[in-house]
Length: 321
Image (cartoon, rainbow, N blue to C red):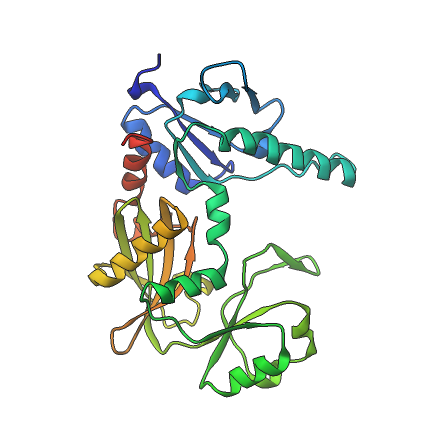
């Protein structure tokens, strides 16, 4: 039997992930075994095997990489960081779709069947928490201030909503890789006017939101029950458009905000999440969104907050009570 100290942590992420490196370094300092892999490496660089129905454990098997191997029944935690699924460009379109589905439901299914390790975060729970309309409704139920928001594909309703508010912004409902004429584009929060709304809005739902008269943004990382809040002063509508324009300061959230954010993660069953809030001129906090698997590494570098330590502590504890 593997001792508790020898039970490994699985880290699923892409090849170049500095944030995962920070957590793995902390785990190495604790002597915690780590098996890092990327689903896109399936084949010679990633092998998975699992046996069902003939052994005491629900899942008996292994994950093997060129440098590591682990018994799946002994996994204490899974850090589902930024994994990339294979696309199989060498195959025909039909074969590639078929192979990609087998990896997702084979490798993914084996991992999902593990006997209750700690997940940060389970991908199925991440996906369920990633719907902005569900987030908005929950935020309002747990007592957070939510900007007036309309999600619609009706151009007339969109124009009426915009006209009834002083300033309105448009946001994507989900970030998606996108190129136009070979140039990568991304969807920032941007101002929108009623005159810009045309019949193309009917093609898909859009998110329109009353602009908060903010003085600063706040990014909050929650890891287990530890809350790290950072005030971001940029003067920008969307601070992600220019990181060079920011100043950062760690802060303590009011207790009701703290409690509400923890309740939000509990509702979605998540061990961690990154929240975006806005602070208005009266000092009130406004909900913007939850990113179940948001970036945080640069915030530790800017503020010295021990975020990677918190992740390593939680992963080390794993599925212990």
